[in-house]
Image (cartoon, rainbow, N blue to C red; front, side, top):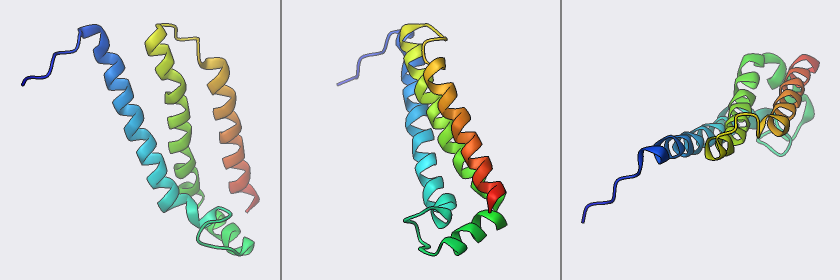
Amino acid sequence: MKSPELPKADRPLELSLIFLFFIHGIAMLATLGLLLPGMPGGSNADVAVRMHYVAEHPFIWHLGWLTWQLAALYFGAVPCFVSGLLICAAPKVIPDDVSDAQLSGVAGSLA
């Protein structure tokens, strides 16, 4: 049995949800591979070892957090595809992304 075709209006929503699924998966893998050695409760229990990891790998640390910032930004943009309003999620997502960026920058510069 052949699956029914989606209307053309639903195609951008479908693509945005697929992209959201993949960016979230990439962010989870980045947490596992890039961020976990520097996070509390991760692979290192010693604070000094975690601080050393962040200080020695600032690019990796920022890259790991960038994936979550992209996921949060896109998660806020998906409702805009549904409603057609670009401004609908900006007040909720932008402050969260800015605070995440500041936190990742502060954590990288303190270590």
